[in-house]
Length: 178
Image (tube, one colour):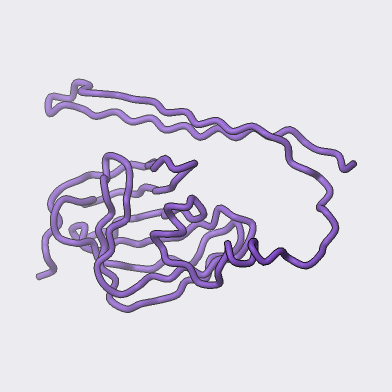
């Protein structure tokens, strides 16, 4: 029997919403905890089962792989763009390389508060290779006009079906490009 190591993973999210006078309107803290065992020795290599091969297709749509919790999205609002341009960096949370398909057109990515939904427009479709357990090269997209992030950086992810947000932003009205 292969030796195993205990593993504990904790995700913590804290948010505070101020009133216009600076007093605290609401606060919350969310802790997600996962414990388990990790096997040190890998099982003997053999042919991959067909079901496992189908579970990880070569090219996956962004929203599907994000909602499955396999990719997190780091977002930085481009300076001097009034919130119209966002830099997205995809972070692979798995141990296999992924190719994320970013289709051309409008895309609404579900998110927790304070974002609600990240509403972007992709000019040209692109497939982005995200190395196993690492980040892809950033891509620039446009944020749809309306309520959105005007400045700041944040990360969106999904853990066991729960939408998570971490970071700091200033929200406001995003206008169309002049």
